[in-house]
Length: 506
Image 1 (cartoon, rainbow, N blue to C red):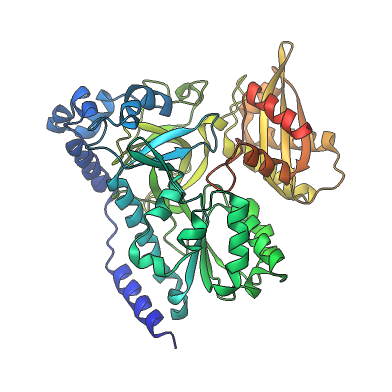
Image 2 (cartoon, rainbow, N blue to C red; image 1 turned 45 degrees about the vertical axis):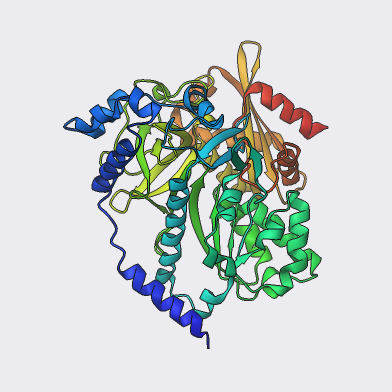
C-alpha cells in the first residue's frame, strides 16, 4: 500500500478544494497596481510616471494610454541592455540573477531578465498545476513516482554578474529542495550540455527509475523516448516505466504528435498542456474536462489583448503603435488576439509574439493559435498560423500523411509571388507534390476568403515539397538549439528561407 502516496493525495485533494479561483477582472487590476507600485521608483517607472498612473481614477486606462507597446528589440535597445550590463533598478527593482536565452523562433537570440519574483511566479504556477491532479483521481501510488523533466541544460553560463540559460534549464536549476527527491534525470545528467550525450545517459539509467510523469517539448520528448526504447531493446516505453501516467507538454501543439506517441506508449496516458515562455508562466491546463489552458490572472503577469488584424501588425510582426488593446473583461471567445504582457521581471506592454483565443471567457481558458511572425501577409493573403495549421491538417487527413512540422515563405518571381511550402513527414513515400499543392491551396481558400482573393491576383502559384521530418530536427541541431525550447519558424522571410533551402538540399 502506498502510504506516503495516500497522504500526499489526500493533501492535494484538500488543498485543491480550498483553491478559490479569483475574479479575473479584479485579479488583473490588482496585479497591474502591484506591478506599478513595485516598479514606480525604477528608471522605467519614473520615465512613464507610474505614481501618476496609480493616482488616476482608472489606472488600467491610464497605463494603456501612457506606456507604448514594446517589441523585444525595442525593450532591449532602450532598457534591458542596461539591465544586462548590470545596472540596477532599470525596469524592475534590483538586478536579476538570471537571464533566459531564447532563440527558438527568431533569427537572433534574446536575453530576457528572470527576477526572483518571476521564479516564485513560475513555482506557484507549477504547484497550482500539481494540485489540479486532484481532478484526475490518480492512484495514490502515482504521488510516490519520479518525474522526468527534459529541457535545456541546467549548466548555466556565468556572464558578468548573472547566469544565462534557457528558461527550462533555469527552472530546473531552481527546483525546490523537496522536489529533488522526485526529480529526474538529476543534477549531474541535467547539466550535460550536449543533448545527445544527455539522452544517452538517460537511456542507460532508465531501468533504475520509476517514472510516473514526463515534462518537455513533444518533439524532443519523443526522440528521447525512442532512444530509451532502442537502447534498452524493448517494444514501448511502458516496458521500462510501467507506472508512467502523465505527460506535461508545452512549447508547441501536441496534436501533431498524438499518433506517433501512441506508437511508443504501451497504453494511453494523461496529456496536460502548459504555457511556460521565457517571459513567464502564462497558463496551464487545470481541468480534466477541457483541453484548454487556464490563464493565470493572479500570478505576477498583467495581460492585454490586441485583435489580430492586418491593420494592427507591422511587417516585422510587432504591434502597431496606436492599436487598441483590450482588458480581460473586454475580450470575446473564439477571436484571435495578440498577447501583450507586463510582468514581475520588468517587461512592460511587451509583445511576447504569440496569438491566443479564449475558448471560455468565464473560465479564462485559452489556446495558443500561433505567432505574429507567422502571419503570412506579404501581398494581403492574411493567413494566420492557426489557419495554415488547419489547411495542413486537412491535407494530412485526406492523404494518410503524418506531418509534424512545416515552413512556408512568399518568394518573389518578377512582379508576382509564389508560396513555397516544406512539409516534414514521418511516413515518407512517393507523393504527388503538385496534387498536394492544389489540395493545400484549396483548403486555405476555404478557410480564408482574403487568401482566396489574393490567389487570383498577386500570388501566382503554390508549391509543396515533402521532406523527412529529420530535416527539420537537423536544422534545429545545426543552429545549436537541439533539445531546448527551439522550434522551426512556420513562416520564414526570403533571406532565412534561402538558407533553409540550401540546408535542405545540401
